[in-house]
Image (tube, rainbow over all chains, first blue to last red):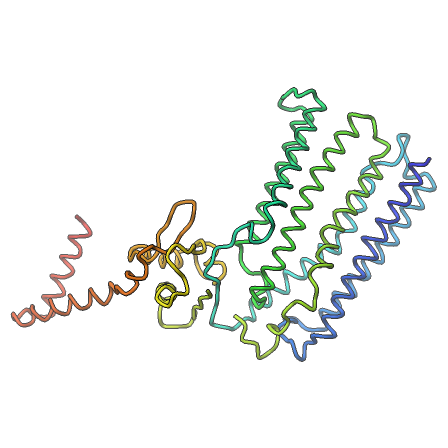
Length: 287
Length: 127
């Protein structure tokens, strides 16, 4: 019963954090941009129209409101007992709801990609500039953070094999979990390589802003990798030490933590006041 | 150190790259031993084809202005400053002009010079 109450608290926090608090802060941010850098002075920022930008904000807000209500409906059905099985609350429930909660963010990303694509199409400048210096991973993150990422993986693998008395067998749980995490790490490092050496998404963005944004994103990816390693380690502990009843709470907390270290970290550190918006002015000659 | 290319210029983009990197060395903006970005990174930043940057790097390497060190990357050559002033195109033009002037003096027609030049060039490529 105590665990169920704890689950309510944690799950309601998930609903509030992911469908109200962070979307609210993002909407505030977008409105600030619209107010301080309007289409009249910064036309390059709105390749489609200011109205389209406004519609996207409204749609984002509407979907999040719906998801907030959906979350409360889920809480009601858990309370009523419809969503509680014989073994208690399904640990995948917070995850499934999280996936739906992430849809507005995904739509926002797609909107962002669409905008930058239009910016590129409308970019008529004939001069292109580049810095004549190579970019490396440690220009963006400290070697300590990188070491922590690797150490988290090794710790998780060591723990996974420890629970199996260090019997190295293909197809064992420890082997499979290590491989899953390795695939995840490869994916994240590919993303990091793309961020460092890939094409510019926003053609007008200044080099300084690009470096800063990439640095923040890479840092959040590193934190995510560490969190994933520890969560997988926790999942193994759950299976080994019969802690299954804790899993729904742990799952919800883990997902919230992921959003805090990604969206929360970005909102906190990528301050709008520090971004160079002059590059979006009509008469800007930024390369 | 920033370089800029004009995509609508009559000068090919690889030539603009070669010239600007040489100028940067001459003006001391980049020093011998300094690392250069990878071909892919520079091509992505300048929104141009990898092959264009690769061609510029190949020409700079031929002129010993830069040197590739395998997986470690590409660096400015230790003798880059001295080698930057050597303009192979100007050198070829000078020697060809002198040779052609000698042929003309001897009474060889332009048409004969062209045919002979093409034959010699083809032979050297074939052999």
